[in-house]
Image (cartoon, rainbow, N blue to C red; front, side, top):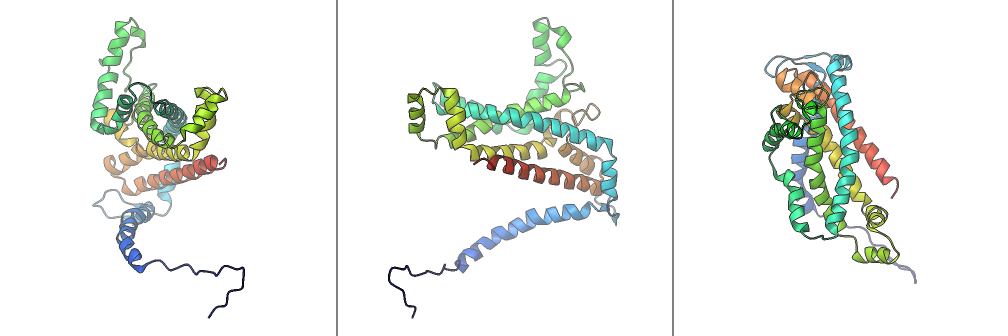
Amino acid sequence: MTRVMPGTTPSVRPSRPDRGLTILGMPALVWYLFFMIAPIIAMFGISFLRWPKIIAPSEVIGFDNYAALVQDPTFWAAAGNTAVQLIVVIPVMIPLAFMLAYYLQQSPRGHQFLSIIFFTPGLISLSVKAMMFFAILAPNGALNGFLSGIGADAATTAWLADPKTALACIIVIDLWNGIGYTAILMNARLAGVPREVYEAAALDGAGHWKMMWRIAYPITKDYVGTMVMLQFIWTLFNSAPVVLLLTQGGPGTASTTLSYFVYDLAFQSSQVGYSQAASVVLFLVGLVGMLVIRRTIRANY
C-alpha cells in the first residue's frame, strides 16, 4: 500500500486509452492509409518510371524524369504563372475577405441577404462558373459589349485568348470565387469576439478601422492563418479545372499553371511517369509553402 505524506497530493497514473475506442478508430485509420498515404507513396515511386501510357509497360529510369523536368520550358512557364497567381490571389483575397467578414459582423441592414450573396459562388458548379465567365470574356461577350457601348472599342480584346490577359482572367475568377466564401467563414469566427471588447474600444474613441485591424484581427489571427493556408492549397492545387474549361493553358503557355501542367501530362499527353515527377514537385512546393505560412503567421501569437 502506497503511503501518502501529509500535505502532498497522491499521484494518479493516467489510464490507458480504452481499447474499444481504438477499435472504433481503426476503419478511419485504414481508410486514411489506403486513400492518402498509399497514393503519395505510389506518386513518388511512379515518378522514377518511364511509363508512356497507363496500359503500356514501364521501366525504371531513376531521376531522368526530374532531369527532363528541369529542362522543360513549359514547366518553368507553369511555375512562373503559379507564382504570379499565388502572389496576387492570397494578399488580395484574405484582407478583402476579412474586411467583408467584419462588415457583416456589424449586422448592417440586409446582412443576412448579403451573406447569401457572398456565399453563392461556393454553391455554383464549376461548369456553370466557366459558362458564366466565358459569356463575359468571349470576344463577343458582355465585357467587350460594355466597352463598345461606352466608346472604348480600343480596350476590347479576346480576353481568354490574349497572352497579356489570359492569366489575369484566371486570377479574377479565383478572387470572385473565393473572397465571399472566405468572408463567410471568417464571419463565423468573428462572431466569437465578445461585443464588450468593441464597446470598450468605441468608448476609447476607436473607429471601425482600428477596431477591425487592432482588435478583431489580433484576436482571430490564428483562424486567419488557417484560412491563408487553405486558400494557398486551393489556389496551388485546384486551378486546373478552370484553366481546362476556359483556356486549356493557352494561348501558348500564358495561362498554364502547375496543376494544369500535371493534368495535361497525365491525361492529354499520357506521360504517366513524367506527370508524377511534376506532381512530386507540386507536392513539395505545397508542403514548403504550408510550413512557411504556418511559421510566419504563428510566430507572432
